[in-house]
Amino acid sequence: MKIGVIQASSQIAKNEVLYKLTKEKSKQNDVINFGCFEEDEENYSYIEISILIGLLLSSKAIDFIVTGCSSGQGMMLACNNMPDVICGYIPTPQDAFLFGRINDGNAVSIPLGLNYGWSGEVNLGYILEALFDLPFGIGYPVEDSKRKLEDTKMLKRINSLSKVSMVELLDSIDKSLVTKIMKNQKIIDYIIKNGNDKNLVKWIENNR
Image (cartoon, rainbow, N blue to C red; front, side):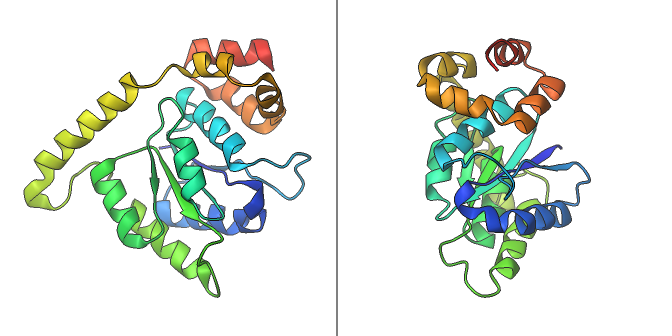
């Protein structure tokens, strides 16, 4: 599983610890840090980051995203507007554990400002450990796992039916927003090189 780490510019100071703990707790070697970074020329709101997350996941360049903003709520809501994205809000280890086992989505949003406080990185570590502790989509509790997984399958089906494609979305949103997103050369180059959705990759190549 390819895991991407990216958070809003408002929480740049948390990027390194978020990346480090994701790499450590996911036990994955393939964790890519997309920022936001201190040296970035542009600042990105949670809305703009959610579109970049949509591009990474819809293109299939990345399998899973760990993200966040000050409260975590805005990023979760914005990500869930994106095609091909099911994002969970995981402020606690319990939420993280249940999202991974039951909801089996492809993105999580963590509050990186609200209630972070002293030793906040300790709680962040527990959250990520609970998220990646067991395989995704195995259901919980065990005696209800079959029913839970059927519900998750239905949720994903409805989610796909209720959304337009990523290309249709990009053609519909404000052009200035698309222009700014296309300036994120690291992410755009990564999608062009690693994306498996040929239509979306072609659109990006033609509009960068």
